[in-house]
Amino acid sequence: MMKDENDFGADFSAIVRADIASNFDDNDGSLRPQLLKDFLGQTTVKNNLSTFIEAARLRKEPLDHLLLIGPPGLGKTTLAQITAHELGVDFKVTSAPALEKPKDLAGILSTITERTVFFIDEIHRLKPAIEEMLYIAMEDFELDWIIGQGAAARTVRIPIPPFTLVGATTKAGSVSSPLRSRFGIIPRFEFYTQKELSEIINRSANILNIQVEEDAALLMAQCSRGTPRVANRVLRRMRDFAQVAGKNIITVDIVDEGLKKLEIDEMGLEKYDREILLSIIQNFGGGPVGAETLAISIGESMDTLEDYYEPYLIQCGFLQRTPRGRIVTPKAYAHLKLDNLNSSDNQNSLFE
Image (cartoon, rainbow, N blue to C red; front, side, top):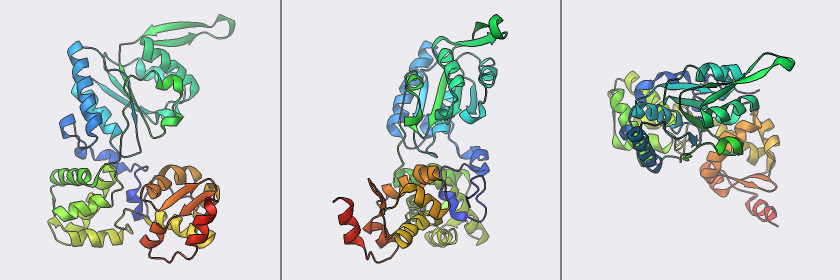
């Protein structure tokens, strides 16, 4: 049975899933920085964007269209909001799945003001008809609109104010070439370092009015999977544990105990990460096993397995993708404190 991705429910370890945006993530705008100088991490992206924003402001022109690429939870939406704030212009936001018909896009573009920043999340999921309408809007700042039906139908071009489209995607390869070529600025977001995440945790702790020991901040950063969204979630839960315990400071002991209760280990692996590794070990002799078979064995969709779970497990060095399938590495056996009985057989057969 698939898990409900809109509700963490009893699966508390899912707080480390950056691909699931909870209502708390959306509503807790107090933790989102409003200015570039307060946006921590992504130094190269931030510095370059600062230059482009300043140049557009001096010329009193809209910023070039901007495509933000990177895994979920790294700050793409936040940076889009900051861009509008720094430019001093309106900010409109939607997502590709919400744009079902061309009239949905036309309804938004017909209400924008000059130099508005228009943000489309998950832009790789745009329907072809909407994408084609967007081409003309991005290039010529006009809307193609069909009036009438059948032989009497005609196309009318409606001018709209110059604007900046900011698209965000977790799947750069799924953005069509014609759409991608219309973006002038295409930065790629990287996972955050533990030091950067520790700084984000300390900044958020100040806003939430809770003290955090330095080592406790580092421990929370270590299990946050390189992602600010996860770091802020973990911080809020540790604040809960501290306050219920009558403490006004988050200590290493509180974080240690809290992570155990949430079933998150020191590497940021949650319950289903470990289930994936254990399924490969216990059901398939450590691998190799195909993605579809593995997804069925753990009750997950193949997209979620490949797009969310596997990248982090590979990044940690716990999983390998080979031509014959997925295989658990010796490092994973060591992390799970299991004996690797089939190590030599599996590793040798993979590359024969």
